[in-house]
Image (cartoon, rainbow, N blue to C red; front, side, top):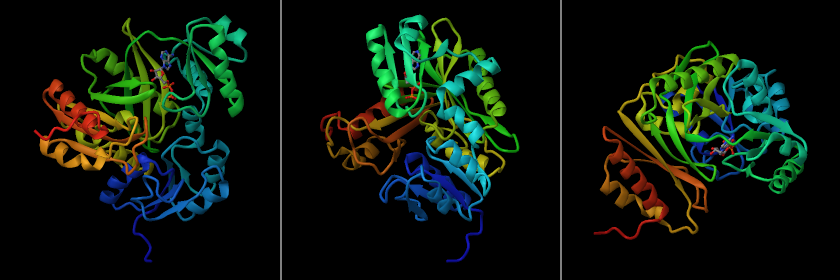
Amino acid sequence: MPQPPAPTLAVIGGGQLARMMAQPAIALGLPLRLLAEGPDVSAAQVIPDHLVGDYRDLDTLRSVTAGCAVVTFDHEHVPTDHLRALEADLAVRPGPEALVHAQDKAVMRARLAELGVPCPRNAVVRTVAEVEAFGFPCVLKTTRGGYDGKGVWMVEAAAEAHAAFDAAEAAGVQVLAEELVDFRRELSALVARSPSGQAAAYPVVASTQVDGVCLEVVAPAPDLSSELAGQAQQIALRIAGELDVTGILAVELFETTDGRVLVNELAMRPHNTGHWTQDGAVTSQFENHLRAVMDLPLGSPAPRARWTVMVNILGGPEDTGRLYDGLPHAMARDPFLRVHFYGKELRPGRKVGHVNVYGDDLDDCLERARHAAAWFRGDLGDESE
Ligand code: ADP
């Protein structure tokens, strides 16, 4: 096979984020090489140059990155020591010293405190007695390995604290206690940053989480004061710079009922709260992630429309078969609807796709996006009226 003309980018992890990186990679003529968890996973379906293997094995990581200029990630679970080892051979973006702040919530909290970034009151706790001393109600989190609300417990009494310690012990990680924040809503501030230090901030969005899973995103966050929006963007830009993040950084925030923003957590990869950018921004988060990790000039993060609404499609209790069969109706009902499927089978609670709707009227965008997502999930009856 002839050598590809551009330097190859290795991507570790074959989920939907890697799959959606493939679209702008095609447009930019950027060859991708993927390490996938299995032969049929979401990104392996669309990236022909893939290898199936375990990202926890250094030799496997080396065989997939051999000959590549840069390696980036679909998730944050590659062991930090492996990332350090890979740095001898190629650019690791984001690098291990940055990524550890997205991998370990205790490390992240300690660093943000040093930087003076506003966070919920928190402490690493070793025993139930220490949780009692911290105070109830509180939120207990395993410091590593959690996602989509797994590894998070809302605790009101000592008896409820054991589950977190059991899970932490089984996983060999610590427990972090946080005050239960009284928040009005959750916000997300997304920035892209390149190794040269160029940065681009997307409009701050509002996200709705149900059982720890992101369900809906509205861009920009409705009725957010320009002061808080500016603060949230400044926090994200500052963290990206101080931690030397390369690629996309998502900063999940709480907007408190008394009008402050507090950082909940960090992600250093394209993020669910940035999926709206595929159709609602000049440059999608996936394209800006690629540009950033390849140290190319960033594209504009400006919105293309007044409002963009993203609604995730989650599997319901049973597979109704509506996902693909639902396309004719959804497309006929709304020719402006943008559909993104991940090539995954419907399973209860699993993210299998999302829809984006943009326009001038927020209520109309919400109605259309929610309707389409519910239709694909199979929650709506036959609409062949
Ligand atoms: P994950 O790493 O699984 O995404 P998060 O730390 O984002 O976990 O927590 C999941 C959800 O739990 C958050 O989106 C939020 O709704 C809720 N949550 C987390 N921390 C707190 C807190 N300190 N106070 C109130 N709610 C919280």
